[in-house]
Image (cartoon, rainbow, N blue to C red; front, side, top):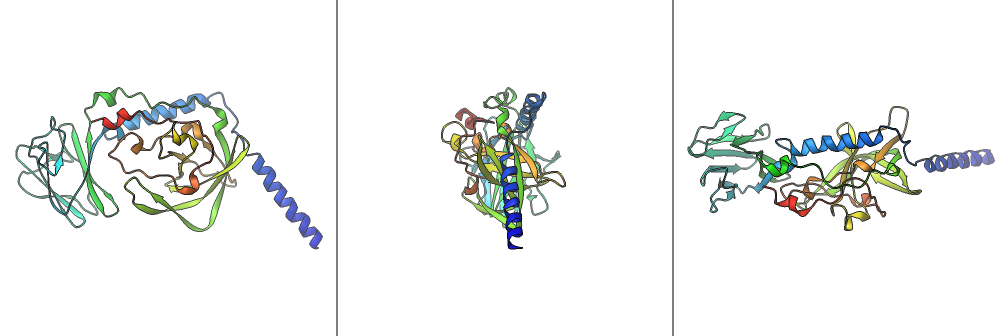
Length: 308
């Protein structure tokens, strides 16, 4: 009996190793290059839409009490001067809620409804997070742990209008690889740090095991609604790609299978790679690959950080 069990164990181990060796490139199709180009065309559209990441022009963390705003340099929050009066009004932070008071010379609307001047109006609470605007400037309150801030967009920007995409590597089919998904046996969280230095525990459904150039690697996946979310780093971060890593979304395996695919040709820059007004997350320690992944988007030019 021990002999039989030993043979069975060895057989299962061999089958597992053999199947892992099959985790190579996904079979190439004639439409693959078009698929990658469609992905980046969609991404360009999302980045340049009215409230896309490239339209960001400010991020201002609120202090408890009154925070004056306008284009004047003596305000607590200084908006771009060509778009709003010197004295536009104030944001009032009181615990977990924010009220806004605007001056008569600043015709602000909230969700297209005019704000009555010189009267405080609730602008943010647990159940309320509308968009306000004057002219081409639009803003709302965002929360990051115990911080509340104003995120400002400018929809009028010729540089963004002309954006055609970030530099990226040539599409290489070898970077579209099969991956085996292994779910965690117990509920698991991963420690993730953002650009503000805040650390949070993020739910993880499992790990993805794959091969690149014949070498085995794995990445820990994060929950991402109906797909898995990956934050990954690799050796190209040193000089070719963004220092803080790149992002990807991955499909769960189909029912009855544990195989999916990771297409590194679609690895894209997090928003903090090209905007200083974002709070994106960095790769968990487990997801920094000891290899060069020369696929996907390259490090953006520093000029993107000056877009207003």
